[in-house]
Image (cartoon, rainbow, N blue to C red):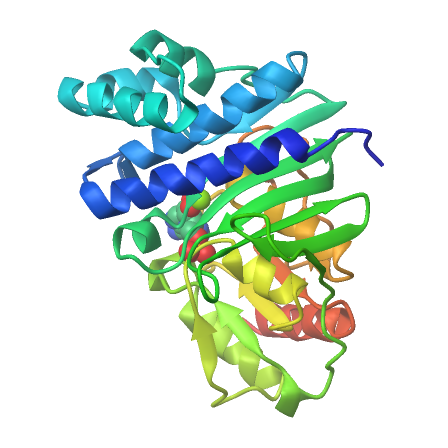
Length: 318
Ligand code: AMP
Ligand code: MG
């Protein structure tokens, strides 16, 4: 349980969606943080908006967030820095300097046991650049446990949606705040009925292992829905899919980022689903920027034990 109020984040997430859409319409320029990890001015702009909102309402809280002030200053060329400040000033209706940007981007940096906000300003940047799916995600950790989430999915359905959860309630509403509806995971269990989501980026998971796991679950040949970003968690939370696997190649040294999973996991758990690593253990969000866990198994809960068993049997058989 947390006594945090998510209301200030709703407005901030909407402002971030507005900024992202403006950048998409007017100019898309990405710089590379390395290892083909693109970042745009919208990533910095959206994070600054979200961190600013948290700094105003919860000045004592900690934030674990993807982008950093020093990278903004060193990777983004001066004309683009000026442009993002202008965009933010228009979006927030206040003057915004580059110093403000850096201060907001780095506000509260670090993990704190009691309450930490976990921000991925644009999850699925490749999807954002290709005008597919992406998410603007804020997770809330209370004593290291996923306790809340506000996640905008601008490419969801007709016009996008904001998903949020707090203390066991999960809601979906329009980006403009219209028509809030409680969401819940589906109760499907039969292999023939299961709907499966996975990453669109083949380098983010082991196709070989996942194909064998699907086969072990009787899902061989099934039509899979591939999409970018944490919207996959939202699809499971809202009962539109039952299974989402993230399993890496044997020997992979990749560490999953906390911000890629905190909001999604909070949402799925609040909607009645289950999120574990490949061993069936809960994700450990208490270690800062990365998770110690190997892979993710995200389900509607009903099929979770069966999926963990299938994953384990495939990994054991290697
Ligand atoms: P998705 O669209 O579900 O693949 O999620 C996109 C996120 O995957 C990005 O924000 C990256 O942080 C993360 N990512 C990048 N490289 C990898 C990798 N090799 N394995 C798993 N996830 C990755
Ligand atoms: Mg991400």
